[in-house]
Image (cartoon, rainbow, N blue to C red):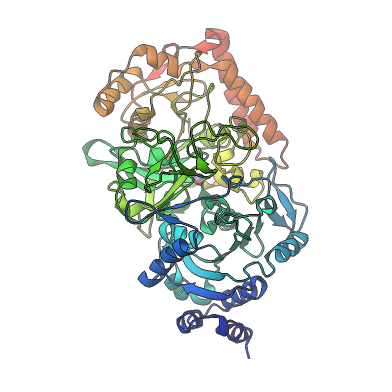
Length: 632
Ligand code: OXD
Ligand code: MN
C-alpha cells in the first residue's frame, strides 16, 4: 500500500463519508500525509473536512456559536468573539523562525533551532485536541487560476479561526486539485489549547508561534488572537516572503487601491504602513476604490509591476471608526451580514460599542475583561478601556460599495505608485515623492520608522525602524530583503513612483498637524504626480507639493480652505530630526551582516543635502526657500 493510501486508511474512521471522499480526490499525496500526521499527533475526537460549500460555511458559523467561541449579536449575522485578556495582539516574543544553521536575520528577528523547536512543538500538540473536533480547510492566497495563486491547508480546533478564514480568504480546494502534484501548499497547524469557561485560551503564558521555513508549515498553539492564529494572514506571510525571495517577486504588507484621477483616469497604488497606522483607512477613503487593505503579492510582467490582494476580506481595527470619518465602514458594520467582531463592548441587548464610535457611551456590558463598567481597573490597577485598542472586525470585501472592479483579476492590477507611511510625530512631511526607485526604497521604504502600537503586545509609542513595515514578518535576512526590493525596480519600463506619507506629524504644542481626511488630498496629489500633471518643490528629502496645487485640491476634494500657514507648518523641513533619523537608520543597517552597498551612498547624499540646506537656511526650513519645478 502506498504511503498516502495508508494515511487515508488511518484517517477513514475519524471522517464522515463526504470528508473521506473529499480527501480522496486530492492527488497531492504530501497533503494527505500532512493531515494524517497531525490527526495522529493532536488526536481529535473527529475531523471535519471543509471545502467551502454553502453547507460547510454554514456548519462553521453554527459550530462557532454552539461551541461558544462566538456569540450572536442583535444584528442578523453578526457575532462577537473574545480573546483572553492577555492575548490581544501579535506575540512577537514567542513567534520564532525555525532555522537549521546559525542564520542571523538582523534587527531582533527571533529565530530558534529547528530540531529542538519542532520537538517542543510536537510535545505541546500531543493529544491537545482531546475530545474536540478538528477542522481541515483549504484556501488560496491570491485569485484562483493565476500565477499568483498559492494553495493552503489549515488545520485547527477553532471554529472561530475557520469562520474567520472563510470570510477573509478564497476557498482553495479546487485550486489544490487543479495544481495537482506540482502544488506546493503552505500548511498551518493551530490549536487554541485548553479553554477557560469563557472559551478563551487558558495557557496563554505557553503561547508559541513557530514558523518552519523548510517544511513551509506554521504552528501556533495556546492562542486565539487572529494575528497569531489565522494562518493565511501574518503566519503565511513569513512563508510567502521567503518563497518570493527565492523566486524573484515580493510579498508585501501593503494595501492596494485605485486613486481616481482627472478625466476618468484610475491609477493603482500599493501602500505599506505598520499595523494601526492608517493602512485600512487609506484603502477605504471616500471617492476611491479598494483592492486590498493588508497583504499584496507583487510580480513583474512586461516591464511593469502587477499586484494582487491575497485576501478577500478585512480583519480591520475598529477603534475610532465613526460615521463621519469612515462612512463606508460604518455603514457595512451596521448592516446585517456575516461579520465577526472581536474584543469590543457587547451590551446586554447584543448591541456594540467601541472607543470612538458614535452615540452615547454605554455604562454596562461585557468586553475582553469580562463584565465592564466605567473606571474598571485590571489586577495591575490599569484602567480597562471600553474596547481593546486592537479590537477588530472581520468582514468580506464584497460587502463594501467601494470595492474595485480589478479586485479579483487573476492578472492583478498594474501599479503606478507605491507609498510608505509610519507613525512619525516629528520628522517627515505629510507627503513627499522620492527622487527615483533606489532613493525611494532606501530613504523612505527601508528607512521607515514607526512608533509601536497595540497591534503587538508590549509598550506602545516606542520608535522603531520597520523596513517597508514588514519587520515583524521577515523570514529572510533584512539585507537580502532590501536587496530584493532594490533589484525589483531594475529593468522596469515605467517604475512606479515611490512616495512617503506621514499622517501623524505633530506641532510644537503636541497636536496633530493634519486632519484625518487630509490623506484624501495627498492621494490625489500623488496620482497627479505619477503622471507628471503638477509640479513640485525640491527639498533635501524629496519632492513636496506646491502650495497652490494643495490649495486647489483641498477645495476640490474636501471643500475646505487650505492656508499657507498650514502648508508652512506641515511641510517645513526639520533638519535636526531628519539628520538624527539618518544616523539611527544607518547605524541599524551597519549592524547587519552584508547590507546592500548602495544604501550608504544614498544616506551620504541625503545627509549632504540636509547639511547644505542647514548651512544656508538653518534648522527648520520653510518650503518656500527651496527651488520649484512647475512641470517636468
Ligand atoms: C494586521 C496586523 O492584523 O498587521 O493586519 O497586525
Ligand atoms: Mn497588517
